[in-house]
Length: 202
Image 1 (cartoon, rainbow, N blue to C red):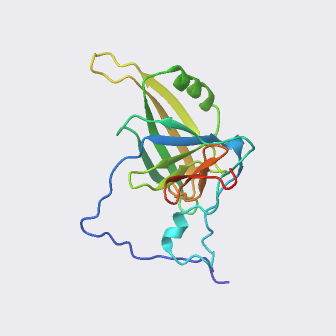
Image 2 (cartoon, helix red, strand yellow):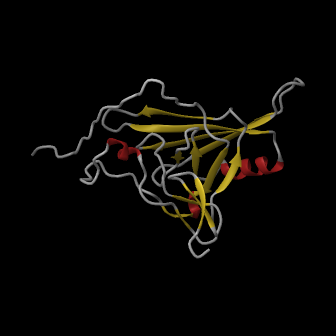
Image 3 (cartoon, rainbow, N blue to C red):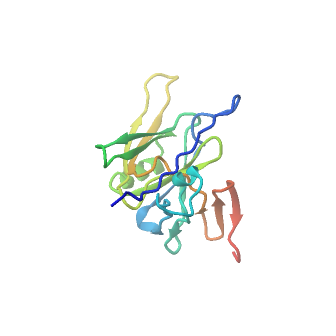
């Protein structure tokens, strides 16, 4: 019996002079997984409709939320937060460890209250990179771990901040999301172009 798993390797071109701005944008979106009724899906590697290698890293569909639930946001410290991924596990069962360090200015009560809840909860985070692309940390298969810490600093020129260390395993490194991100009953972010749009009939 021969293997039938599809492969779609393609060349990866890097144009001279192209820019890849580091970091992520200031607003980080999140929702507890208990609010999510349906998740977007990664395409299967055997999907005959997939012709472009890039599609293997792109979620298909939307996050469907429970009634009266929407994505909230956290405003991060400018030019301080970052996202990483790395391969983990043994040959044949390797996956990706997706991580973010989300740094917030100060220690306001809302941040401390968020920390109290999030350390024992399971969330999905959606961030936007400097190029405008939206990506996801969190999925329906693996638990998202969020560890909170804070530092008042000591010296007068120091930085008082809170940090949320986010970690979740995935079968894809920080998959790209181009669907809808509901932020209210009448508005959503179209993650394909980053524009805030109005719900039809809303």
